[in-house]
Length: 355
Image 1 (cartoon, rainbow, N blue to C red):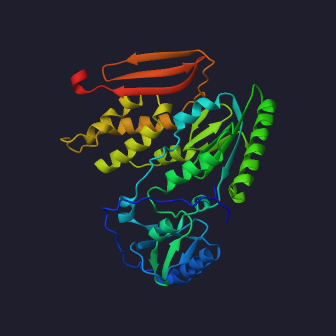
Image 2 (cartoon, rainbow, N blue to C red):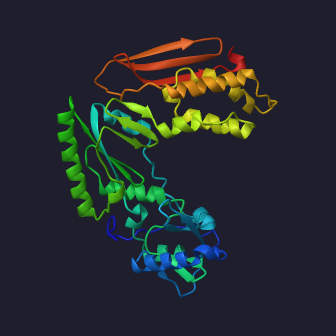
Image 3 (cartoon, helix red, strand yellow):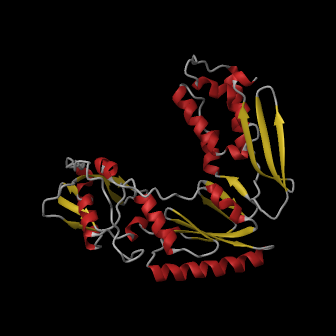
């Protein structure tokens, strides 16, 4: 295993938090041998090592099965997570990235192989990650899955390793490369140069790419839960499918799930807050549950909207912008336009005191 930066990563803990020794995780007989073999493989790869000496912290092991059938060994360090002093390094969000994609026409997406394992722990931090198994105790030599701070630590390390590369965006263990230009040929050349520089940097920094998940020279890729295309931003088809196949909610919990799904793609949906108002009304503290014709009609309108969403243009600071606003008795709406192409929709239902 290679590593991002050679200096060992140090985890700082709040000394006022009492260390905890967790119970041994019970492993089903059906996967017990597989778990043991996975632990042995991780030990051979120097991802974990056995622990024989006494340790203050002993975490619970968690076993998750990947789609491939392989097992992922994690830890469940609930008390340790409370004790960790976190840097709170921010993860990029879609709004940070979209302005960079003006004239983007070619995309590649790379996946890091076991991303967290690129980060080596120093000895003191490694001891904190000790975990108990039916086969003895182990500690992590690399950053494990399960720590609350793992994603932000890895994000900071990866951003530092790739600092200065243009047309490259990393979020968690995904790396996006995009080429821009007035036409496809120019964008392709720009993309290829950026990709070559990225691969050179990965070699220099010891960053391993998962060859089975490479997406190269694409006109569209899924990134941060949205589809990026050479024409603009599109809703992820999986999210459209999830709403289209959703049954009408039967309780407040179902309404909240629907609201969460719709809010995630609200930028694509004109006047969605006004349309959703009859449904969202059911989440009020004193609301009596009633799924009537009004809610059913709103639900069907939402399904129709997500079936025919617009393509949103990538914001280009060089182009003129227009904001169109509208108001009705029930809500407010706005569209941000870039040379007549929508960039984003926004809406808000009016509260009873505003009507």
